[in-house]
Image (tube, rainbow, N blue to C red; front, side):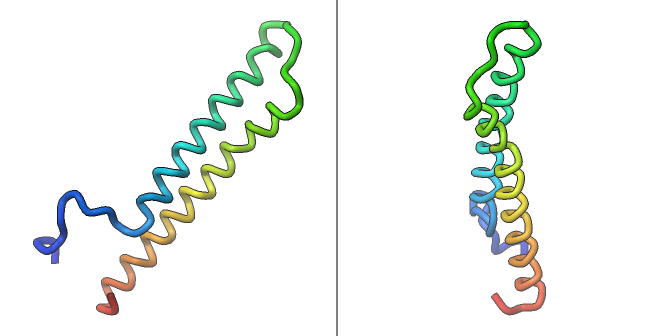
Length: 82
């Protein structure tokens, strides 16, 4: 079965995992930017910046959905029901 798989073919869920990683890192960057003024004793950012920090969790959920989609696809292939 492995000889039929193309080395550069994207499996099911790969796009969701990549998109989730990008959203997660944007959220991580927003978290660093939001926390920095609190540590440097300057004026804090507006409240919406704290909302952008929530993108870390959203990205994690998107990537998790991609992982579960990949698992489901692998199970379907193992059963033979492509």
